[in-house]
Image (cartoon, rainbow, N blue to C red; front, side, top):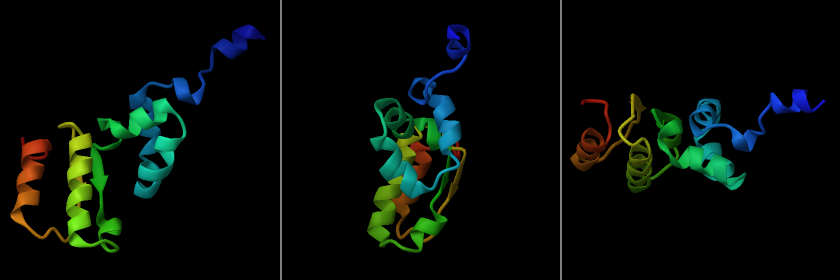
Length: 109
């Protein structure tokens, strides 16, 4: 019986990059509000670059004010830690957002 149990890991023991792959199937709201509250390892996975290689803010941008969009965009691009591969966003109001993306993301490097 012990042999069988040793083959499986608990969710909180999975490596952050594996959790990140699993979490990419969740909504932005779940990633930012629910997952960080579950346990320390899940919080680490969503605050690190593991979930932020592909950022899609299209649906979220329809419901937010431009200054909130800019703050959200900056936070998520920063979390990607240079590993950003794709970004979907509409409604950016100023050039500083574009400059920030090119400096901190890897889309154009």
